[in-house]
Length: 170
Image (tube, rainbow, N blue to C red):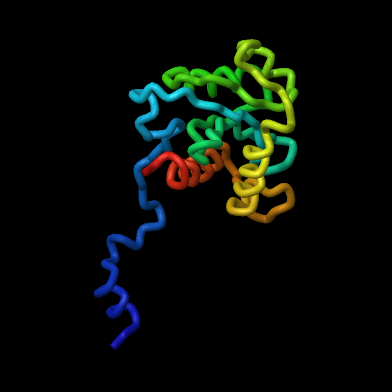
């Protein structure tokens, strides 16, 4: 009995193609929890986290909003460290009723409404801890790693799928 006959029985030869095409699924960027129908005021801690694609000169920033009472990420986006990417995140959060924004003192956060914005390290301790949790669980977010992404598309999909699975689903 040849070794090929055994493997052909368990996995047909037509499935051996190395160019197997899979659907390009995109992970959600905002929670599927029913927070928009409820009249709950959210407290959002917003922060950005550095990573890279291919080499450290090609920076890729993960921006996300953390709700400390739910202990969940409620929205995220990827991009540069600027106001434009922050606006993308705010657009994702526009359907929610946010009572306060807690951030660090990075200049991009100046676009948040001043009466609802608290800029202090004291109120961002939980999201900074979540940054550490993400770095420990995802090699692609580590500073010194062999597990890095070669394309921005795969980088965003892998991290986005992890966030979706851990934080957005019930």
